[in-house]
Length: 311
Image 1 (cartoon, one colour):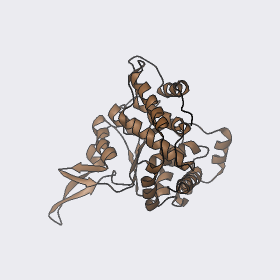
Image 2: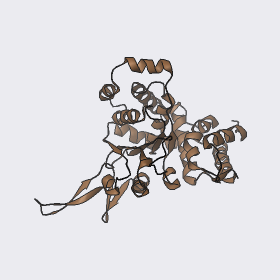
Image 3: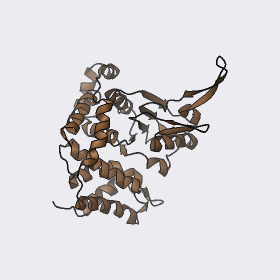
Image 4: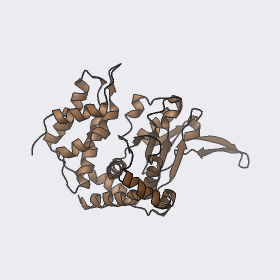
């Protein structure tokens, strides 16, 4: 496996998206990991931090079709998936695809949709297909759902169920820029104009190769056991209602492999696992009732407490 391909891919994505969002290289890198892993992203952050612009930039970087869906309480599943309608000219029914038929789907403020509409995403995110009126439509690759939600406004929102949260490969947050970074944004040209000028950073053929190749990154038995020690600790803790699922352990395994490859290595070290543990795992567990435990802090504590294998 040629790790130079992964290093080049990371550098190109950081350079392109870094023109749009200043000072958020780690988040850009993590979304790039999700893209290679065929995973979906949940961005939870305060308003005005650049979530939508960052996701638009990513869509431009891969040169795929992009659709933005503004989720509201009155949106219906058929508004997402599409409908069959009667074409009077042809005298027959035709299928009109919805906005989920794209390479990159931005589900904006996903927690404002009712559970019925949120569940319409489940099959799409997991199976890369949509079933309508007994017919199944395969979606083109690459396919990634990038959802956003605002954590501070709870009025009129519907929290995502655990089954849907578990389908997001990572949960990330941008946070505010530093004053110096924000001044540079104020002085530059409009962000939309920058996005319009962005070149394609990775072709679909290159991305397909990266998705096949990252599985060749070696994970030693010690590192694999280290991953499982983290997962097991979440399942055994009496501070949590439930721990990380098998889907979560597989996601952490993949993320560590891709991270290692992006650093130019064909083997995983414990630091790769620790680097991805919080964004991959923290949203896949739930507090015990009436507990105010922060799951990010909980995972961070596990990483400090658990013994790290030495190689």
